[in-house]
Length: 397
Image (tube, rainbow, N blue to C red; front, side):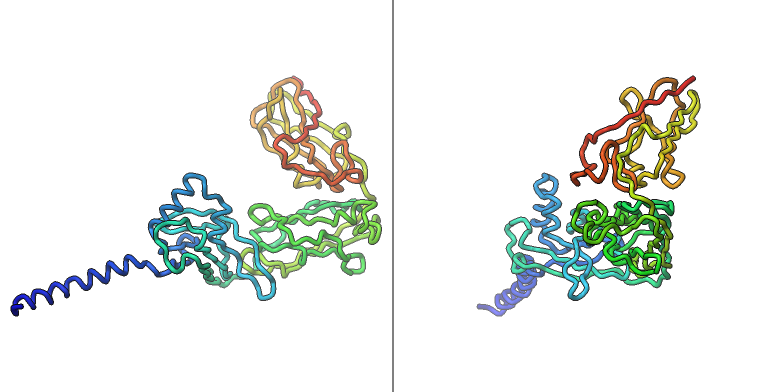
């Protein structure tokens, strides 16, 4: 071979080596995907997945064959568990494909100063022709937003029932907070104290359950129904937590953490007195209905002889005419003994119906036509067409 030919051969090899290396690197794609917290969007993003895998995920999601359960099994985000505390529930949110990445957007923004465990079960990825070593593995990462120096500011803003007299068979209470709270149960932070300042043991339902509303600003405290309902073993053994004629204090401890991981600004105390138990069903005949005048937007005022459950009253009472709901705004007043309804449009003369859905209850869990003491606990308000109770009133000229 001539000197010129040898030089040309070496030059071609020099040119081909980088191209060959690049081709080999592209064919391998063996680097595992990256799990990271996107601080700009406050989302968890999984980047570096093969394009074919991302396309298959997007196709399955758009076709409806990839469910929320599939997404959560593939990519699970949870609050980092404290040592020896066991696993924590998965964070609720939605999954999307964004810019070639799998993205998890939490229902509520990730808390500052809190760490989250993220697990990508790569074995659940759609099968495509890009088999790589990490595909049968579970890839884990810990992500979090940096803590921001803050002072405690969250407080209890309301307690319902708002009055200071409760029946001895009180069933539930509602605590409202000024800002979203931590996801944990309030069982360890809410205490009932007797007249001597001693804790009433096992007053509340001992369940570490999610009794929060959607934005974690309202927590429902349940008295243990086994102690409330006569004839049940806990009631026979311990009696009711509230005894008629005695005074109590509801204490919400300052250690309860808000959504930023900070304690409450201050503890909350509410003094109350227990009255005799209410063990009769509700009846709409005992309600005072003050009908407004036609041509006005004066409120319809309904007064109850005893307080009703605040949380249920907001959803269970309404006004209808000729089978159609009347649009308007409702307000609850006077320690949950009065309901005012202001119509969007002026009242027309004629007959109307005050409509009470079957799940409406008083403070002791009694419903219209059915007392809690004879209830068999098959209680739900999740049906699409709940039972209705009505009372007619007339708007005069």
